[in-house]
Length: 458
Ligand SMILES: [Zn+2]
Image 1 (cartoon, rainbow, N blue to C red):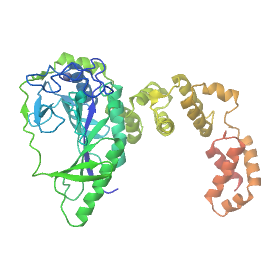
Image 2 (image 1 turned 45 degrees about the vertical axis):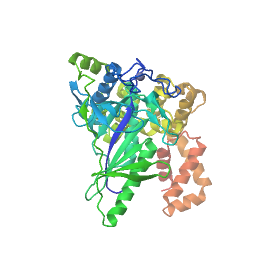
Image 3 (image 1 turned 90 degrees about the vertical axis):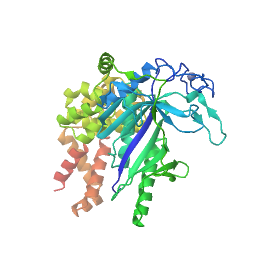
Image 4 (image 1 turned 30 degrees about the horizontal axis):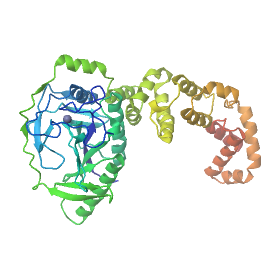
């Protein structure tokens, strides 16, 4: 993939499960309710209605989010009106903490190698269906967090993994309700001029990757024709998989930001802030840094720290050898979680049983082949790996003489492979290893078998 820069503006719904209320009124937050059943004069902007003070739970959750990125938290937060005329916005403006006069909740943080510019709190507009023209005001006034990243992404695949880790982390601290979805605006630019293009309305991880890839190739085509990439806003068309021109820099919308006279400044007291800090785990960036210092590669550390359940497991059992266990978790455990399409906390095994398996594996009491199949089984149904290994006689064959016997048999049976190996074919050797593994029912270490075969075939 060629060079590019990419930054994200991410909108996620706040987990308000304690109060279950919207940001400026007491209407219920329920994404399954029938259209226009959770509404009141405030969230439908009836004449004379005024917003209530913002939901304290939402303010707390947005601070939690900013703290998980190590952001600086501002003490006085200002609400603004962001004006635009759209059927989903009954007041004609959105109440937000972003914009010209804004003081964001948090700024200058980082999350797994990507800079976080700002973290804001704002209300969600209603849901407008442009085809039927109907508007559902249930969603009007839901609490949203907006996270703005620095343009630090250089790898499209990393965007997807990073976003997954972000949502996992914010779900872990109960700041975000992942079931309500993610909305993203994506900024993409390519060399030599890096003219910034903003893509609006990208609403799934898969679409984000597609939108970035499409936009890079579109810009490259323009540049190869000798054109300049002008600053502009484009809309993502998910069906067609393309971006379409919306407006240029000259046509940029004037949101006429003004401080909201109906809403007081939100003062963040030091005691409130320190209480929230106390309730939070260490941030993924700090966790990753700590294990990197202990010898784990930066890449692996960042991947593991993207799932606080996994990194906590590592923290708890690092006496087992932190570098070995980190590599094992990344290579073996994450592979099986991926296979099952589940998160660590969704798998139903007892920690004790997972540890049994890890210990058998690490001590080479079982071969990696047997270990892998046991781990796959364990991810489906809980059992004691130690008992199973004993009962079914799955211990690895460590005795060299026993392995040698199997290797001799394989050499006898695989005459063609032996000839090919002697002519220099590495593949032929691997097929002999496979033959021995079959004879041992997978209970040998392939690298050990290879060693023995090489000696015997000298
Ligand atoms: Zn309401």
